[in-house]
Length: 570
Image (cartoon, rainbow, N blue to C red):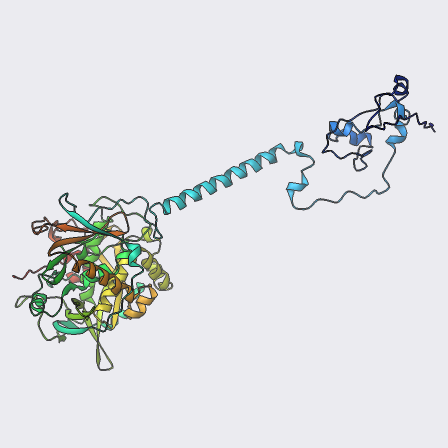
């Protein structure tokens, strides 16, 4: 065995390391070729040998990672320590513990961390996976940005650019601008209304339509001979009579009041004409106003075609929905001549004219000690339950193309009617809220909702009835989160604002792009000579081929009824 001799080690009293006064002879006595590893203050000193390395075998030494820091502490090649003489003994050295090292856990990340150079392909896969994840996150941020681009809690559809319902003239003076966020905080309670005058006559509802299903669907019939009236407030002779008798200070119709009450849910632009005459206030609509039509997919996120001549454009669908509602409201009745007549006849019909089944209830609400409101409310049918008459409002939801809504009514109405209604509440929140508000204003005992769809998605003339469902108005209002106190709070706030205005004519316009309304002061002769674009008569419209049959009414279409407006002389 080779002997080990200790040379003289000089002592440095002034600090670490060899003393400056050390002689050259003492330094020469040190062992030659002793390796020296430079280090910094952050390095840990004192490591003489790394017993965890598997470099004792000649075969393993070729595969190990040749780290320069490790080679600085490798003394096997130092001749002064006899490494060259005992190379054979070192090659046969083995650890006492011959068990294999434990396999690391936690998946492939730890499995290959000590041999990275052997997996260039896996590194590329990880880079690609990170790129794909980053792309997904970027796409998600873009979707959220587009959804909330318009601001507010109610995201609007991306591609649609809405136009104002009325052209704002430069001579109009804007008086006030009210955001919808202030409407949602309003609340007001009114007492029960009283009926001043009732007019018209009602036919009884046919209960067999409640059993309609997609498997035994019914064709929507066409009612050409029945006239429907959409008369504004100041053209109503009953309201003129009540105004002359000072029965109230504010006058309106249920259509106008429901538009105001549900204004925060609206997306499309609308306008209401306000006339201040003396101490009275009249809420009117223009001739050919959007209030006469029914919006379709107004609150949907899927944009509708912008071309006006497209059968699925917003304007075409509104006209189609209005005709469907008129036809549907008359088809579900017993047309056997049995009617319930109110005190006065229909004020808009001439003698011998066939009119639709409708009843008008002129009701008065007391807003405060000085202000009371009279509104003309409508009901479409009557039903006798337990020897008591129940008044009904009848409306129809229409499906034009399942691709837009994502729910096929023919397949879902039987098994998932709640899902169909939820989709309609999402896409037509404003329309359903207005129908509910009108039913509450008229004190209807039941509101009937029909589900009407096209015979074919590209055929907007022929329709079928798939189902009819009844709801109690106040319960349905709770389901769609329609607060009656908030409805009257909005009306009360607008009435108080308009009562402070001077005598004249004003217009309340919903902004087409922002959730807010504006009040403009307009000239006294505004809207009197407006050109109204009416739809073509059915005889002049291009229609698809209709199946031949004896009963022409069976192949009914919703576009066959023309709304007739009768204006009474002042």
